[in-house]
Image (cartoon, protein in one colour):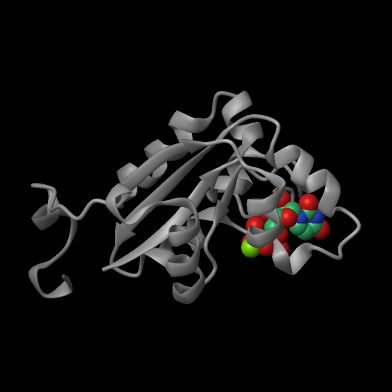
Length: 153
Ligand code: UDP
Ligand code: MG
């Protein structure tokens, strides 16, 4: 199984959408392997959004990501990275397909509800960025045989 990182952004927390977003992942069958509230800093954002450092919107993105604490989730499942990314939708909520989290909950390109890891490699790096090893739990929910066929896990 894979584990992927989700961040519930400050706008999601402020809008009272944290439960609705988490509910979607739980109902899908993803397992919560870790959950944590964190106040982001310029240092961690410079690492996390290093690919955007030279973009003109970088300062306002960082300001928005520090407006309130965020909720970090580590979600586990078969092909979890691809599944969670597909549930997220494209970056701009106005372009995201209805049925995706961004497509259903947002109207903005910046305030786009959640961050989700975009590859297996970045998921491993990002989980390590936001969680200590003992904050990630390896357990088997009793519901597992109802979520997957025997030969899938
Ligand atoms: N972002 C933005 N304007 C843009 C592109 C990105 O404000 O034109 C913000 C947006 O919040 C996005 C984040 O920067 O989620 C990270 O951008 P990335 O390209 O990694 O998009 P994502 O992987 O989140 O879809
Ligand atoms: Mg990204």
